[in-house]
Length: 465
Image 1 (cartoon, helix red, strand yellow):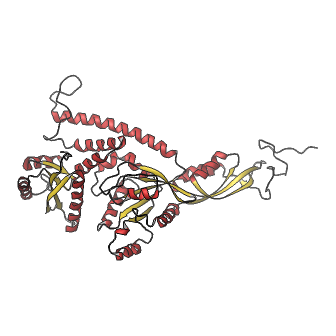
Image 2: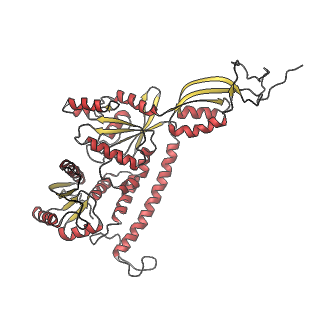
Image 3: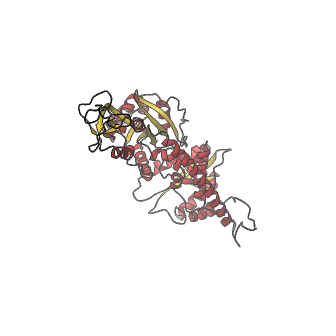
């Protein structure tokens, strides 16, 4: 398996199959996307080859006749590489390398190559390297560029170990190192999220190149997220505070875009980045309204969210690039089909006020109403609720427990809270559930049930003779 050259544009042939249930549109759309991926990686596509099959051939992906056809194209066009629209097994890769005698790249390898090119931070580079090594570890063939020269000595290899076995062992050691490094990053990010628990967390999700980063920049003026018209321009999670209204501020995160046939190992490697999606209170699902296959893109995004265990998180569908729609009837149809969606142009700043209003509605749709009595003396508990909940009303009263003479000052808080905080607040409710408001006591120093003033410390003072 190879990387695409970066010093010059390479000539490539695309190969895909149609299996039962696939339409010609499905095949063309998938190859169109593969061509965009190839272009992003630095290759120019000269030809496409497709074949309808019951299933991909276990030995060569496509049938022998098609393999011969591709081989002739490679020779005639002086092709540098052949790109396959699905993952190739180690056996398929070996057999095709022998026959085609040129570089081979499958869809996962191509996506990983693009990720490696776009990785800018240490975290992104670590995640991409882990995904690449896990991918390559199952595909070592005679074309593999060795990680080190075969060597002997104590502790380096077992008797008769081949070069591939040596490389596989070295890859395993490197994978272990990278996983340890990412575990440390994951713990650090978990600590950071715990320090921002008072904010509602919203993540931008969507198909790659749908305009998530542009929307991030439009909503958070200081975001400065790289927004380019190319696939996978964003690999690192960027989080900024966004003020939706005068009294509603959220934490908004931009994450890596999704794509069909996204390698599972890539999702696993990007756990630290994608945890922003898993931990979100709500998702803004950004959709390119101008793309003819946007419904298929929505399906892919939702399937990926299910893989992340985030498919039950409340979503706001955000149809972007509506300013570029040539047919206004399409926009009318979309608004009828998705009446709760938001329709915006992130590039021009259109529809952002309506988006904010609808996002607040989605965020608060699952919020729970709670009323609690808390002792005024427990300021940490009162402050905690103000941090994590939307307090609607606060009253200062007096309360006591049925079996005690003591009357204490309490705060009665009426608030709405996100589901993720309910369990935490239930502990507070249980702690003070026996407090009952004492009617008729409205001000001044706290008093006991018999009317005597309560001394500092909560004891009922005795009247002097």
